[in-house]
Image (cartoon, rainbow, N blue to C red; front, side, top):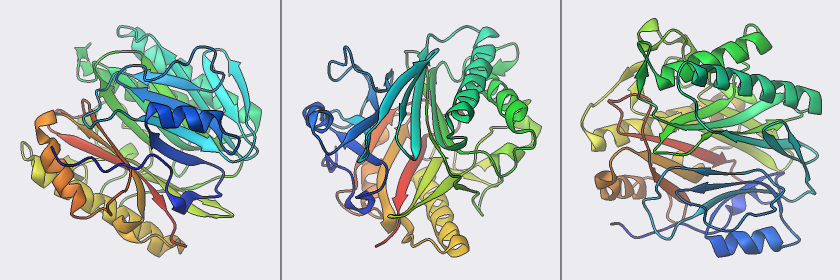
Length: 347
């Protein structure tokens, strides 16, 4: 195994912004939560529960994905500003002056009820952010078990896509340019978990010049295409950040390099670089390609690929950039890994 190289604090590039991401050990999470300088927006545990959250008011969830690096880390989102907490139905909410963080976790239902549950929860999320005055989705995460399980001629991911599509289409109508960045990845167990960040002011949703927009995929991938943008650019007074969706070895709409994890990793990194550089060129944001990545989350189908992934990332990503590497199922069976990122604007 390659050496562990994660920091337990947010990148300095995000200092002073209205949200910060930490991949931190449980003891570090306890200190952050107890401190006066950070207000918790949301807390996500991968694998088992990593610390006691009894009585916690902030949104939190457990995702059934084994962490492949030690020691285990918690995904913690914080705000420098005060945060108010609430629960609306199944959705736990944290609100700051600019942002809303929400999460919902429910027992996964068998098809066709699963698809209906996805549509209901997306509909509830969209109604909530509209009513609370944070109508602009920036980023969404979707985790559920059995992603490749087939029922009624569709796999569970295709059922998920159809449920999500229906809720978004009902809410937005023509949603071209309105979809947020997102990830949808298969867990080994646990609930259907959706968590998200929404804002009072809109971000700019971005597509990748090397890839067809996912929401325009041909029907061979399912009756409704995946409804997300490749990234969302959000400008804050303290600087811009780019929320990059789960990205894989796809060029155009086709998977590349089946069975070859090294080639898939290289193709995925080319996609990430192209997206970041194209966004910087089009918007004027000061993103320095892959050098601007502040956090990485890697979903890996086979733990045997871990040394290869570490070596490939170490060759192009700065030492010390926090990363989570998780054993997960990817939405296409021929894809071996997927990577999402947070990118910070250069000072």
